[in-house]
Length: 287
Image (cartoon, rainbow, N blue to C red; front, side, top):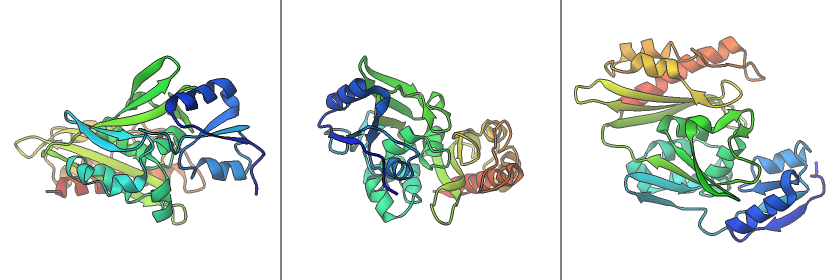
């Protein structure tokens, strides 16, 4: 199908993009990588009258480290994250997740910020940024503001971003030598979206126990969320198979699991337990 008629605008700066969003209000949509918005437009699920392309806005892409914090521009592509030497050294979870997204075309054009702002409940990035305790920086008419990741995802395709705000960067703490992380998912065979995905970040103490765990999950409900039951169950326990198995049994606790075309509530609850176990085992096994 063809999209409904729209007017195309190419923004050169964040201010230009914001001005267009303010001018056209709910009739405008931002275009980043386009892998979510354009298919929706072709199916007429989305019919913006104005499309604001931010693909060439200077300063919105790139990866740098600032005093122990990794700063990733919202327009940084999945492939740039997958291949980043800085991230492989300082936060290996991000390249690991990026490598499991879609196919090479998607990874070369799709962006981290576009995925997070779209908030697809089966996307991979939301689980990762939740587990890493990221902060998301948005810019709007009143300036910049920082949003804690636990406050960012509000529901199905809904975030804390206002209609006249642009997500500009994602800030993630660099991982120390005692932090182990991994991502495990059951991918849909066609789209590669997560039927269920689990990101695990384990902080080990000097005695070989897990001092803190941060577990993000995606695919199970209408939004990505934190697996608080697993986090509480594994904290203070040894990073061994028995402790991980026991903690993973709590993966669905407190999670609003929803049935969909990919499976029933019971099936997804089972997948959460399986992939929470796999993610934690993989993280604990890393050197």
